[in-house]
Image 1 (tube, one colour):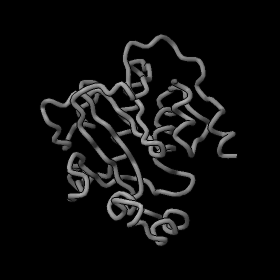
Image 2 (spheres, helix red, strand yellow):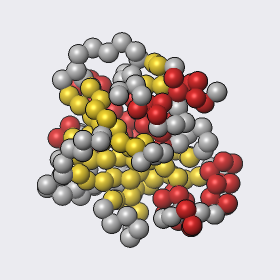
Image 3 (tube, helix red, strand yellow):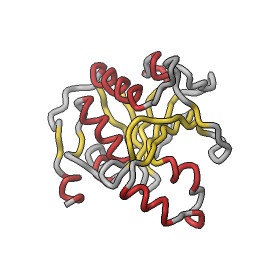
Image 4 (cartoon, helix red, strand yellow):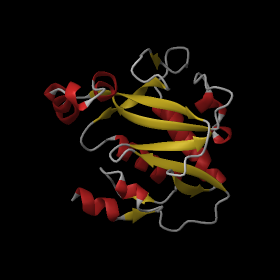
Length: 189
């Protein structure tokens, strides 16, 4: 059923686009890459990106997998159990990129879709009482910043469904629902 739903396309009709965002996958985990100059001030606030940054990669996922599982040898059954059956907290991974990677999948996007995608990303960040993003101090990912996120990770809401939902809400071509990275990647390759 998960594979079938991945192949059902929503927002099929797309108009001409003058901008681009990108998708990246490590074979399992889907990330969204947006040119830094296309991010609004609300998204950029508190990110402390280097001046040389040209693109920003966003990933979303389960806190335990990000912080406690640097390798598969560190994987524990309790993490999988929590992801399957508990209300697991999530985070946003933010990674600055200086160059366009030829392996990224280009996604054409119109200005109004980009504005909606910016709002979706901003709403993903959990904010403190002063409306600042809540950074998670860590040393495991030296090239990334991690922030507390809204939402709960589950078998039906994963990193891939997070990106797909952002595309659907923005009016971009997307899967009806996708557990897998290929569900969305196939629509743009």
